[in-house]
Image (tube, rainbow, N blue to C red; front, side, top):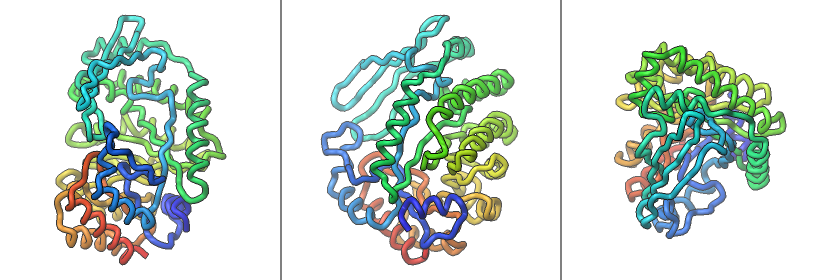
Length: 379
């Protein structure tokens, strides 16, 4: 089986020739490692990482990301309302100011990137009060047909590179995340209690905007998996299980129903304590979820999660990044053996995260132990 065939079979609950192994972010699918001078990903040219990549690449399963343009985690306001300004580019830090023009005045956020780390920090959130959220929600919205066309072009380019061997994947956001993502977590938690109806209304409006975009971008000819990201804000101890029922389930359900009409499998990415959320995801009709975290980060082991979902959903996991960073290779090997002792159907062996900065010799050794155990026990 090719990577694409193996991954799609796992998503659909079909038999596989061996357990699929997905290395996640940090490992580019076409071998195009960033050069040493790259601001965020220069560490991919380090000898340790390059040798690890070259050793593992023929032995794992690959998917390639493509972007759905015109969406964001600021209520999906149109890109025409957003302006970007570089505040600092010192060589070690890049700091940007992002301004959104609203009918009620301007809002702005400040973000920061640091050399050698492939992530972005928010130094100032766009929304810092209930009034700010009302201002953001007042921004007029209409479908940007040009961005939809650009998304299709992006998909076609990635699809052409993938051929029949590599599976394209698209990341989209849960509507709730497009509401909570524009503000500090504390403010979102406060508003979810003081203004739950309004938060639900905003989720509904975000879903409406998303669906108008996705109807232009996705079709029955789109060969891809869609990963819905990040509803962990609605899991304990931050929020009650009832919050997941109210702010996540109704909206993700309709996204999944839309994708399934096009025969596109859907994976839900959700960290944290997901014991209740797992049942919700099954009700939504999700094909898969990741990363399935045991205590202390989560509240469900792989064995327990398998007992909850049975054959109804594929589990993508169950190696914690902390384990890869600090455990002994023998411990990693035993963990993989234990997971695979339950079988290789409806499983994609993966980690809870991938590298976003330079790796250590311990991490490299643990990746090797992971893949060797998968090859021994995952047939």
